[in-house]
Length: 313
Image (cartoon, rainbow, N blue to C red; front, top):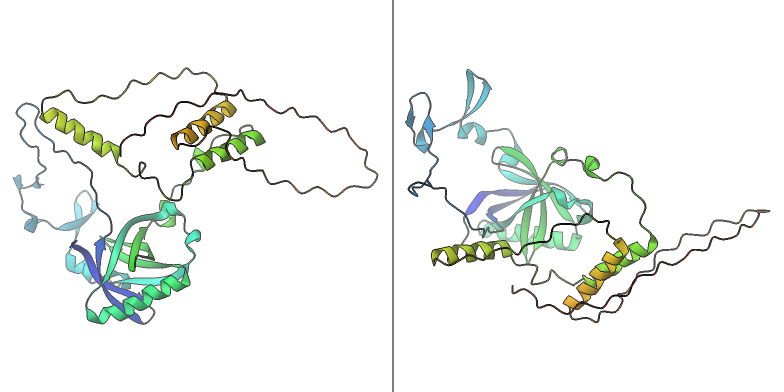
């Protein structure tokens, strides 16, 4: 059973629901130790008092805020526990919003909220049912780890999940990252990009995509070196030529490769018709101008590449 990271209550109007909070995710990354290259001794971080010039235990360590180089304000755990803040002891629901109104970039770590004790079962189920029928997410505020946070409550498989959220001022603006004004893509290029999306579409995340190949590669590297074998190496990639890419040809080839990798025929993918603009109202006595003839771009037909075996998951 996972260890509870926090215990308190959900405040839903005048309803209080005692809960325990556990992490909803696990980290399976391979972690390394630091060691001394000369003798392979472990390198460790020790807690050292620079005044007494000795290592100190955890029981001797407290918190403090440095006002200046010579002034430190000590803060105890009791000080933090007695803060006049309702969210220090409860997850306070403040609003209900549509899911689509929340920018995913603001959503962070997820936690499962578990009813704490028999008395919490009924109000917990009540809130879960209300969230399901309302089809909205609850916005909440809570205080953990020395700061107040925004949270998002939703339902997942009969459990209420709390997602930590970023404050608005913690999200950087992407305005400085957007490219300068470029030539607007042509209709054929947009249609071919949509065809590529069709070829890569699926009802769920593909099984071969939901595999951490980096961790697998690290595991293979460790095993090979443990057995004294030559570890696998990355294939050499060709250096970019610097030539201007034919965008239309690249999209066409990408569609064919995507379809071939899925076992589909290498014919043209479905092309989405672009929405037509509404015709402008005719002006009286307007002179007719000869419509410009547009020449459709021809794309060179390429043979479908041979089907390559998928990588093992």
